[in-house]
Image 1 (cartoon, rainbow, N blue to C red):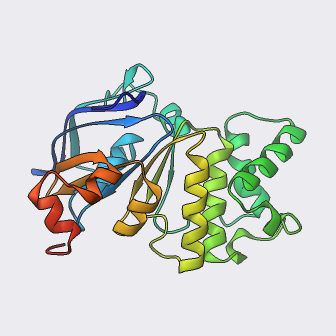
Image 2 (tube, rainbow, N blue to C red):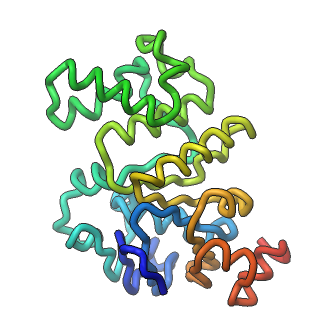
Image 3 (spheres, rainbow, N blue to C red):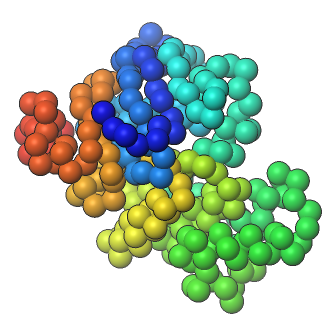
Length: 254
């Protein structure tokens, strides 16, 4: 479908919560340094699927996955895959900002230290660079030792993005990153996603179709666990191929 470089490839992916099949035979490619948005009604499997990409669903009891998700020459769904390594390469930013109850500096330095970095100069430099890449450095450079919980919601979300960037992932997953933010903070996060696309492969789940149209290169529409349509965002929003996609985009259901 595209000449883009495929970064992640999903083949015949099924996922079950107990006996309930939440994802049904999903096949799709994620392209390098592009933003792919997932849209669809609540409960259609969007978040469930992207949580498979960095094995977050492994934490949920009585679940199982079938099929393959290829990344860096291996299958993410293989039980022998190193979970720590996958989560370092495929970072995640959640719907609700979740900074650690530590200082702003420690929120960023923690991941570096856990991964074995001991050089204080490198840690300090990485903290500054990560906060700068997350468009937060100028707002917090004089208060790095304040508790991160004192930041505003939008700042906390950008701090979580900086924390993710500090460990140098290759892919960043955003699960409705603006759901709890005001319009100004939402605009900052969207600008940040567009900037990060230069260096990272990005996958975003959003309920906001206008947001998908603004920030993504490709859009996947899911309904009841099935991938109904996947195409470039321009084509999806102007000439959708599937009737169900057209009905969803025009507000007839969802």
